[in-house]
Length: 97
Length: 163
Image (tube, rainbow over all chains, first blue to last red; front, side, top):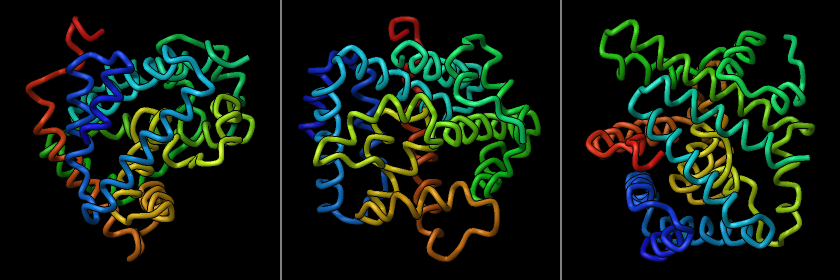
C-alpha cells in the first residue's frame, strides 16, 4: 500500500485524493494478503505502463475524475456523479483524434 | 435500440450528454444493483430513483466504451502493445467512473485472478438472476460500497479546494 501511496503522491494528486484511493484499496474484501499485494502491485505497474505512453497530466486527470465519480456514487450524489461521467466523456473527446 | 455511435460521445459536451445516451437504450439492472438501491435508499423513493439513474448512466457509458469503435478503445490501443498490459486493470485505473473500476479491481481482489474481474463484471451487468459464481462478487461489492461510504462521508473530494 505504501508504494501505491508514494506513486499517487508523485503523480501530484492532492492529499484528499491519495487518502481516497488508500480508503478504496483498504476497503476491498481481499481474498488474502497475497492477492492484495499482487493486485496493488499490478495496478501500479499498469499505471506506470500508461505513463510510458500517455502524459503524466492525462493520467492525473483521469485518476481525479475517477475518484470523484466513485465518491459521488457511494454518497448517492447524483449531480456530481453526472458531472464526473461527463468529465470522463469530455476527456476522451479532448484526447482522441 | 438506436445508438448514434461513438461520434455522439466525442462530439457533444453538454450536461445533457449522458441523459441523451440513456434515453436511447433501456438498461435492465442486475438484481445485485436492485438490492443495493433498496438497502441504500432506506425507503426514500427519490433517493432510490437517483441511485438507479447513476447506475444506468454508468452502465450505459461502460457499454459504449467496450464497443470496438469507441473513443476509449482508441485511447487504450497503444497500451495493448505493452507486454504486461491487463485490460481489466487499465479499466480499473482509467475506465468509466464506477462500474468498470469495481468490476476490475474488486473482482481481481476477491477472486485473486483476472478471471475474477470478468466474473464480477458479469454479475454486475447480467440482468437475470445472479448465478452462484457471482454471489461472492456481489457480496464483496456491497461490503466495499457500504464501508467506503462510511469512510468518505466526512471528507469530500468535491470540496472547492479539490475541484
